[in-house]
Length: 119
Image 1 (cartoon, rainbow, N blue to C red):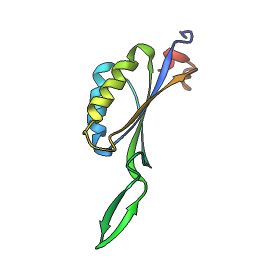
Image 2 (spheres, helix red, strand yellow):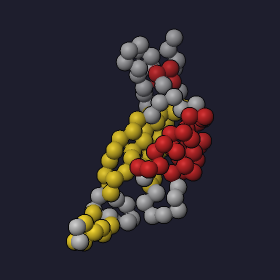
Image 3 (spheres, rainbow, N blue to C red):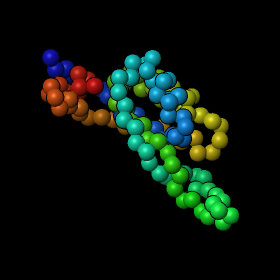
Image 4 (tube, rainbow, N blue to C red):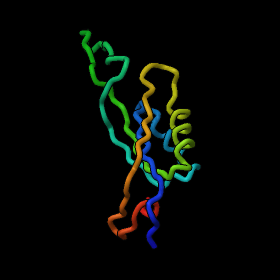
């Protein structure tokens, strides 16, 4: 049975790689059934960092990050954002960002279910 369009959001977070397991574990009790994880590189305010390799200093302009994407119904958004922020936080620069984006449509390819039923 297909449901009508329901309000859905894409929560996209960029976090430090070593925080991934902690963030994933924080989402399970909230009812998050699936998420996408991508290894990415980027920088924010820290503008990269200087590192030493084989005695030479060099500039790293893009730092490794993890991008997490999860689509949830509106009523889960606040809990998901809070859980990610709490689990990903180290109180050091580069902890990351969380973005919330409207999702207009969703479709489960195998069954044809749409919108909330597709999640």
